[in-house]
Every structure is written in C-alpha cells, then in structure tokens.
Figure 1 (cartoon, one colour):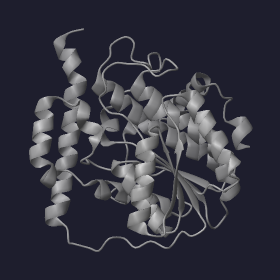
Figure 2 (spheres, helix red, strand yellow):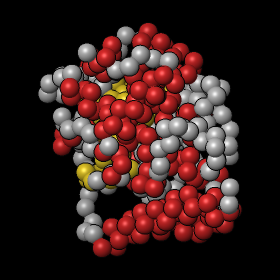
Figure 3 (cartoon, one colour):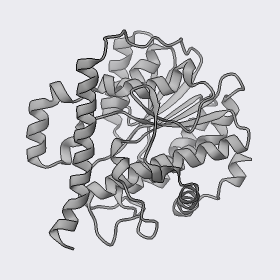
Figure 4 (spheres, one colour):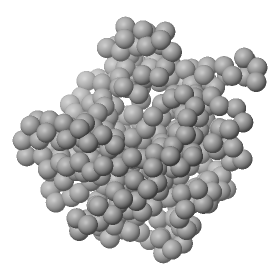
Length: 334
C-alpha cells in the first residue's frame, strides 16, 4: 500500500473536520444569540443512553433526567457509571438515573444487558445510540470484528434490534418512541466496503471510523423504512453533534492534540453544546412522528448522497443480521 493511498482517508477526514469547525465558528460569530431550547417535561418516560458516563452522552443523560425521564446509562465501566449517576443526581436533585453494564464490543454483553433491562418490566420510550470509539489502532472485538465497525455500528445495530419490541409497545400514535443514533460529519467521506467490512485488506483508522459512521446513517434510514412500512409508532433519526471537545480525540496524532488544546475553547463545541441536537431529537415536539432525518444543530439537513441508496441500505442490513446472529427484520417488525 503506497504512502499516498494511506494518507487519503486521513486527509479527507481532517478536511471534513475543518469544514465543520469553520461552520461552527460562523454560527458563533454571525448568528443572533438565542436562549437555549425549552422542552416539555418527560415525567414517566424511560430512556437508555449508551456511553452516558462522559462527554456528549453524560450531558444527554443529565438533561433528560432534568426533564423528568428515568434514564439508564449503558456503559462498560462500573466505577465511571456509578460516579456519573451520583454526579447527575447531585446536579439535577430529582434525577432518576441508574447504571447497567453493557460492553458494546461484546455481543454476549449486549444480550445480557437487554435481559437485565427487560427484568425491570418498565417501558422504553427513548433509545440513544451514543457510545463510540475514534481512530483506534487496528484491533478486534471479542467477537472478531474490527473495533470501529464492531462497537460503533454492530453493537448498536444488535442493541436496537433486541429492544425494538419494547419500543414498539411503548410508542403511541400521538407519542412515538424514539431512536436517536449519533453519527458524524466524517460519514460524508466514508466508503462502505461490503466485501471487506472488517478492513482486513488495508486498515486505516480514519477510513474505518468514517465507514462505521456511514453505516450508522444507512442503518437509520433502513430502520425507519421498515418501521413505517409496518405502521410502528417508533421513529429513528440520526444526529451529527459537530466537532466536540471530548476524550474521543485521545488517539489522534500528537500535533492534532496540541492544536486541539490550543484552539478547543474557540473552535470546538462543549459537550453540552454537542448534546443539544441529540436532546432535541429525543424530546422536541417538533420531531414528533418525524423519522429518517439527519439532524445537525437542531435542524434537518442532507446526509451523504450514498446514504440514500436503498439497495445499499438493504444489503448492509441483511449482512449485519448475519454478523450479529439475528434473523432478518420480518420476525421483529411485523
């Protein structure tokens, strides 16, 4: 593999990141200041948020709890999970938050998490697929999947499918259950290699990350198509949080880390700002009954052209079902 071909995915990802940062700066300096969105209370509703112990996920949990939701944090660190629960309860005073162990890099752990959640005999109104890794060195999950694809995409694919029946039971005609999946602007430069989803032929952390984020968009659009076709009172949307100052950047080059440290206060969103679109998608009355949307800065926008390829959506879905060991959509969505 030539040096040039190895650098192409990296350059494309960083170009997209720069464009997003410039867009964020324009919004900060040229848009009118407006108060934070005010959403209706969500008393009696239940949400699951993956990766809710830090960053965007933590802020999402905190805001949903503050609105009255009972929120379950799904994460792989018991100590960090309990710490987040205590902190959120202190900050919200009335927040009902708890932690359940779930390692999205393990199909077995995901199934155990779903069993534990089902044992609570409570409804499920909101599922936020937020957790993820970025630019990690080449390595595999315990099931043998490339980590970006296995954790970012397949883990959430399985989790969502195993919880679909509970979401369907909780949603109503006037108050749909909601699935929100966090993708990234890097999906615009992502390429889906159906014959090499595990990046075995030529691994690039930037290419693998972008592919996983494109897969999440394709998955969301296919899921919404199936839900609509079956008359389910569940919506599925995908959000782009923008360039956010979180721990996801710990695997980038040291030069990028230095630049981030020097400019984050100006160019990067805070985790709270990054969570705003996820919260909007989860509770805003404007999104009631709306599905199959790509949201950025609390607005509907266009995703990559390839993401609208229905044949690609279908093929990815079918292949994903095989990979995680579940039947295709018919038995779960009819």
